[in-house]
Image (tube, rainbow, N blue to C red):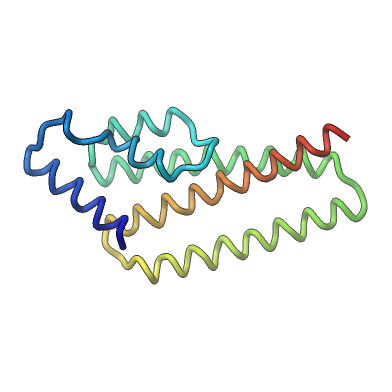
Length: 147
């Protein structure tokens, strides 16, 4: 709820014509909570969106595709380096993560509600989850590659 209030306050300040220098860029607010691996293209898109909800939603969707592609590349590369039990465990772990992701998203949708700002928060959290999973798979890939 604090995040919704923060976004609402930022939007209200912007709508009231507060000086641009007094308000942080939208991307600065997002960066605070973002995992490593989020693209600079996303942050530039968020700033260009200038608090427009449709534009922000488009930025989130585009970055989710980037992160999903990154996750899939890492998963396939890791799958190719494992055999037997390791391969089976990776597949099981990925299925469990997908279930966790779906259940977390469902819970967050319930908790945050259906307001536009809430939908953006849920979408951002999901995109962050995909990025974090891609980071984890990259770490595993580095570990296997060093063996």
